[in-house]
Amino acid sequence: MPAYSEIVLDHFQNPRNLGEIENADAVAEVENPVCGDRARLSLRLSGGRIAEARFLAEGCPAAIAAASMTTVLLTGMTVGEALALRDTDVAQALGGLPPNKVHCSVLAEEVIQAALAGYPAPVTAVP
Ligand code: FES
View (cartoon, rainbow, N blue to C red):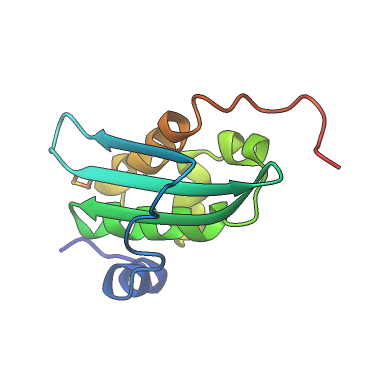
């Protein structure tokens, strides 16, 4: 097993916000075509912000930890902030990923983009 950070192991063993939101405002599921790992994200929005984020994932420890961390980072963000969140931000929040696992956090960025595709970022912040 690659050398994962303590944060990755923690989020893999105790995933945050696992599950699915009923009647979610935004939902998406993406698959990594190379390894077949999948992530599903459901979001509840309120006043232009992400009030709740939940995930389901099938995949390697890095993919599951990245999806878990993504829900933590997303909670409370505006749609614009969420759309600006990159896979590198998720990897950094996880204390880094082993070089051969960096692609696993890309799934997180892709699922955010897919879920919020119908919610263009506001030009100005919602008061
Ligand atoms: Fe597939 Fe990690 S090996 S996402």
